[in-house]
Length: 229
Image (cartoon, rainbow, N blue to C red; front, side, top):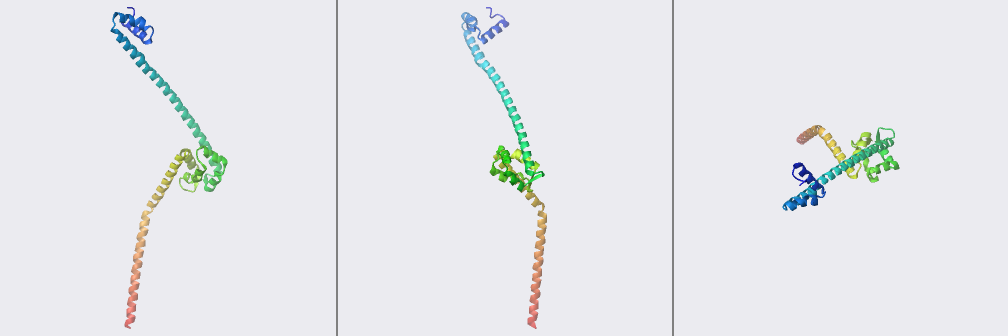
């Protein structure tokens, strides 16, 4: 047979069977006519190669294409997010400069005046911050509780913490916790002074009681002397 006899010709014949080029009439049938049991070999070979192996190869190729597409999509999302972040930063900086009116910080009165401005509302609306949230936002952004908002507080709070309702709520809780922690730390620092003052008060009360008792005793002794007279 021309299709068999050497390793090279046998490999070429099996490749022909794999491609499906006249493998039944030109390759398999002559061999099966000579030795029928080899029909099982050809059926199994075609099933494994064409159905299993080729499908696995196609699946790998499709997976690689999908991964490449997903990577490109993710890079596009990151690029879009970076551009949006830059636009937000520019708008926030403009709102701060407009609201602060040339100062380095925004007071509560300036904040209330800015909330009536339509352009300012539009900027915060693009960040998913409603008018009701704007009313409470001053206390949230004023992290140190100074009664005014400086530029770092304004940018960091709005840019990273106030773009969504849930983020703003979490940021408000974090600010409250920070304020409570600061207040407690301040009180703990003065705790020895409070104890010392309390001890002084107790000593004063004890001395006052002793003076009262002495006065009572003196008054009692004076009254007894008068009775003897």
